[in-house]
Image 1 (cartoon, rainbow, N blue to C red):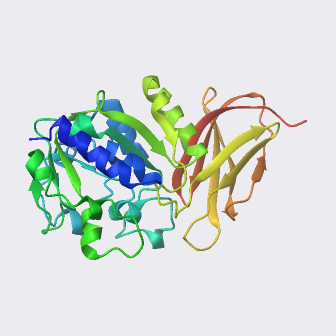
Image 2: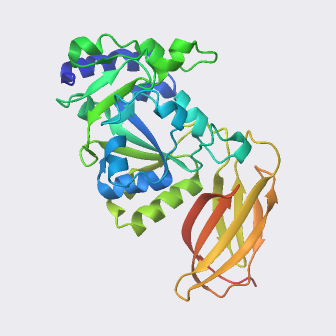
Image 3: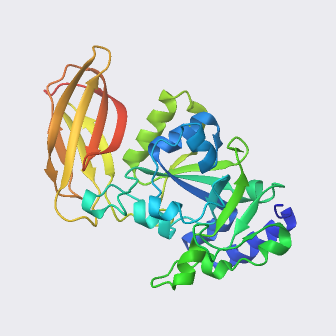
Length: 318
């Protein structure tokens, strides 16, 4: 049993009033991070499903959950799992394009997308439950209803300062457990990504998949209110006659960032390996080309991982 609208309003009013920074909006929403390929799959299906249903239907395209952790406890595998907040410890371990040595237990989600849901629409559903911490932990209990909601410690769940205790880390991963499937039509509020180049990629992918109606929901995160921003991504990409201009974000991984650019002429079934090499972050680069004028599909890979895809009209240099 979910909570009442009155209890939800009291929760939003109480916790929004306590924050003056990026956390002020958190109580109004619920959050689900997904690798870009999984996010597109969810949006095409029009619904989030449980892990159990996603595996059974073969739609879990990129499983970013370490086996050692996900097998600890299976109580929530039949539920759609959302978080009360972004920037969870789980997200910290997998967000951003990194070198393989920096993967967490062999997993990572280079191009991470945050799906943001209206908290009232989900929390007030009759079948919704919630936990006081990460559902893979044996110390996390499941509750429902207004009385159960009162058992949650949101001072721990919304804690976002340095050096959290072990219990605060667990509480940061408090979950909302919704019935599967959870349809996005009346619950999804935003699709949030990290950079301007990521925004262009999401809009291109949505249009390509016939989901133009969702393009208006795509937003770039400002600051670190949704993402940790510790690892690299394509910062922006632009074009000028005879060149492609771009920049990559910095990264906690050491060394140069491996950048590969491929240009696709889909109309003629040709592609061009335009650039491959290591580059320093936070510098504007340009790669020249001698392609005839026309529309091309640009694909960037960083550290061997998908980083960007979009269409551009390229013209030759003077």
